Image (cartoon, rainbow over all chains, first blue to last red; front, side, top):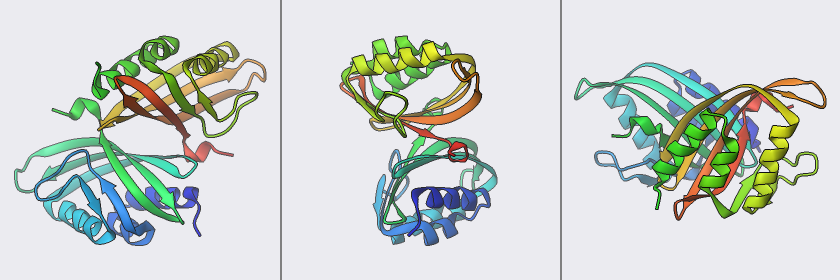
Length: 126
Length: 126
């Protein structure tokens, strides 16, 4: 069974390569709980189960052009780790280009990510 | 009563000015729970109550020379916020100079920080 550190390092590595979907497929628990700061379009803030999270990842990839991303961390202690993301994306529908900066707080249980929670940088909230 | 955002912004601002003690005195709940990744010297990993946390801050200030510090964030959502710290310090006893990088996860309750939890960057763990 993977340790918190192994899961954290692998997740950061896959995100650095832009392999977001691979991260979900290999590191997430079937009953993952994923919490965004607020509801987006047709998605609730809190999603449950790996199918919903795969759907969210697909939606993001299909609707955004990712110009670059920077991944900081992981930071870790106990069963938790934190990864920082700086992502430069364009929303395909509105053509709006955004620099998003956020952290994810991840909880590991039985060698898999059981919970993820995203916190955007404060100055970007409007 | 201060919102999570107000507490987060104020804490980041005071830490940027190096006013760590002022942050504890003005923003922390009396029954604050403070969790380090591991026990240090005579201090347990988990401390409870503002007097213990003040003692930890005093110990850190007295035993380290802080050359510079960088504060990232705050990142926030709901009742939680995250601040990133990059601190360049020398341990006065061992003369060892260290670049520490960590995040703090803070929980706000009734307008005060009720819990803080520190996670060091993974590559620094030995």
